[in-house]
Length: 93
Image (spheres, rainbow, N blue to C red):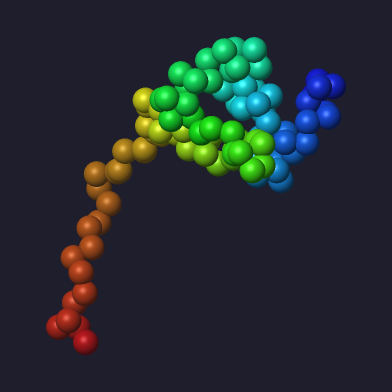
């Protein structure tokens, strides 16, 4: 890990909040890019920095990214020869 990330405790997995540096890294961008584009991103749903904490809730950033996904996870096709359940056999009781 790079030295600037070593000092940023929000990169620790136990931290619920992330710094602007964490948000930028999560978006795959630089901190300068994030600062320049944050107003547009917030208009599109990126969470704002929490005024009380001064950081951004990581779960909200991850939800923002999940919402913007365009390709769903792969769902394996069901095998065609599997027996189907016909429900409970009340006559067998």
